[in-house]
Structure formats: C-alpha cells, structure tokens
Image (cartoon, rainbow, N blue to C red):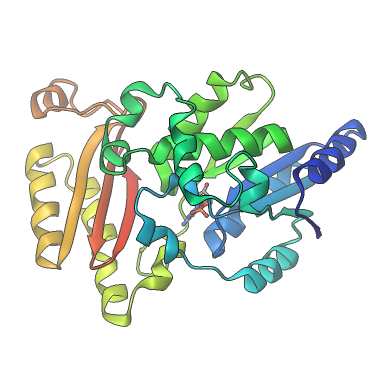
Length: 297
Ligand code: AMP
C-alpha cells in the first residue's frame, strides 16, 4: 500500500492510474478502523483496479469539541488492516493540508464554516442535522476537498450513516460531480449481538457495551411489529425500552427512506405500509453517542 500525505502527490498518482485505464474506488474514513470500514474496501476492490482509502479525523464536523478530543486514534492497527485487505493507497493528510487557509489556528478553523454554506435544505434541519448543528456543513467541507483531490470513479459509503449518505449525494450534485462519481451505499456490519460496528464502540466500558445492543433490539422490535402496531406506539415502546436501559435519546424516528420526511400514523395506515421506511436512532450511553438505523420494509 502506498502512503500519501500530500494532496498534490495523491492527486497526480490517481490521475495517472485513471489515464492508464484503472477505475478508482474511494473510501473516506476517520480511522479507528473496524470490519465495517474494511467491508467498504472489499466492495471497492471487487469493482475497481485501484482502491484508495483516506484517514482524516475532520475537526470541522465535530460540533462537540470533547467528542473530537476523545475520538479514538489507532493508526498502526489501521494501516495493518488496510495492508491485509489489499488496499492500494492510503491518504493521510495533516489538518494544515486539508485546511491550509486556517493553518494551525483553531479559531480560524472554526471560522471556516462561516465562509462557505452548502444548501442542504431540509436534510440539515432534521435528525443529525438538528442535534449536531454545523455537523453536515463540516462533512460537506471535507468531502468536497477529498473528492476534488481524489476524483474517484466510485465512492463507497456505509448505510450506518444513513443521513450522511444522503447529504454526500446532495453535495456531489451541488459541486457538479454527479456524472463522474458513482456512489455505492454498503450495508451496515454488525457485531454478533447486533450492535452496529463503530469506532465509538471502543469508548464503551464492558457494562455499556452489553447495554448498547438494545439499540439494535429496538430497531428489530419496530421492524417485526410494523404490521400489528401504529408507528407512534412502536416509537413509544422503543423509547421506553432505551430510557429504561439508561440511554439519553436524541431522536428515534420512523421516516420516509427516500426523503426523511416524517410519516404520521394515518398516512402509514392509508398507504398500508407500502412506503419504503427507515427507523433512525441516536442516543447517548453516558458519554458515548451511538447512531443506528434499519430499513423497515
Ligand atoms: P467513519 O470512519 O465513521 O467516518 O466511517 C467511514 C465510512 O465507513 C462511512 O461511510 C461509514 O458509513 C462507514 N461505516 C462506519 N461503520 C460502518 C459499519 N458498521 N458498517 C459499514 N460501514 C460502516
């Protein structure tokens, strides 16, 4: 695996690969890799001659500075995992390379978000957008830079970050790359007890780790009882269950899987459940915020 630290170097290298006829698959990550990330690399390797992964803990997408400080870093292990799966290149930029206009000044870095606004509309007003103000602006800022450096043929994203996938699709349209980059959304990899793999799981202690599986159980409860109960009753049951386990819920919603708009009980009954729906949840277990989702039908 070739390691690149400078944007200009990887840009040139990828460009030469594409000129030689290789299609390039790209997996952006924030590191602390697990099998979920690796499954995206495997997916890319199946359809591309060249697979590149990036590892960058993006400061502009953390609305909570504590979350940024505590984000796990396991660089040596990450490199070993990428080598083992046969990833061709890793882009490992420094903050000053991705945000040269801010240099090493933290205040200037924060200020960057006020310099450009991505029109995400409704997508940014709900769920993650509502509970993590500025988060998706930061995601768009880094993704635009990464996509313009790599200019991949294929981009691999995880369904685990359902709303983020929609935001990045929208970004690709906004920056006019919709005809050159094909987005593939890959299924969420889970631990054997159902907990969605996540870098943040490393921060859970043993007791919290056991409890964390309730999120998956709630999503299953909703999926399995969709025909017999109303959406509001299902949401209420899931909420009671998570609260009883000690979670602090940001949101637990059942929405239209294509638009993320809310579905009322009457609308659901009227359509006899034909609409494609997704249940999305974000909840804190003490300090650690976990998110998950499940397509219901
Ligand atoms: P992150 O490092 O958390 O920014 O994630 C990098 C990419 O891996 C994103 O596209 C995520 O959606 C994806 N990802 C994270 N967790 C999983 C998982 N459990 N299964 C599949 N993909 C995942």
